[in-house]
Image 1 (cartoon, rainbow over the protein chains, first blue to last red):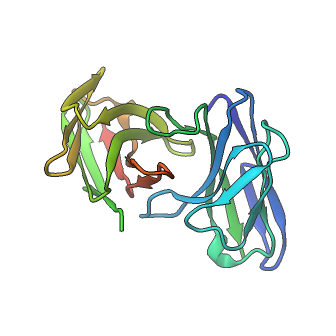
Image 2: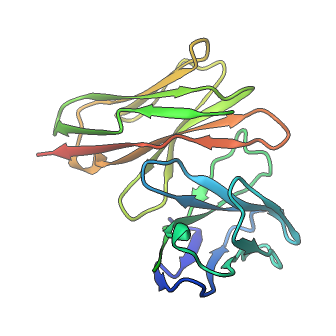
Length: 115
Length: 113
């Protein structure tokens, strides 16, 4: 998944711990987003950003914070991890704010387990 | 509520055989529909995009169809290979201010030798 780097690939947390999933892109693209993927369900949008300094909530934002201080980086913070946040998280980017014609490029994913 | 449903949930076929994956959607207003392939442990990668006016589009051994009247799409894989083993995700974009994406739950395809 060239162009979108996610770290860590795997993480185990205890309930109540906090952590940050990192996402970096090297294409200077404006639009970045975070999704979670759970078994049997489609990818669900957590937060997205249409440019540096601009973020907005997606479908399932509760329990997560994001910031976009630079175009390249879009970290996702879990404030107080809960078992319901056990999931695989994907960061994505696209070059245009309009998603009608452009395609999302996804990172390789971060698998998070909350005990 | 916008929804995308895919069938079957999982499918096992023998190498060399053909298969067809289905996607039904209730997204409105419709903008476009994409099929993504997701290999195990990787992020989804776009295979093809269908807009309202397109009925068929091919990408190698993959052929996607769209019937905007019945709100159905299919992905046909010809002469399957072991490397086709993956999840295939249908994603529909709504033509509104948010350009919202609605993801299907995916079809997990396993190709056996």
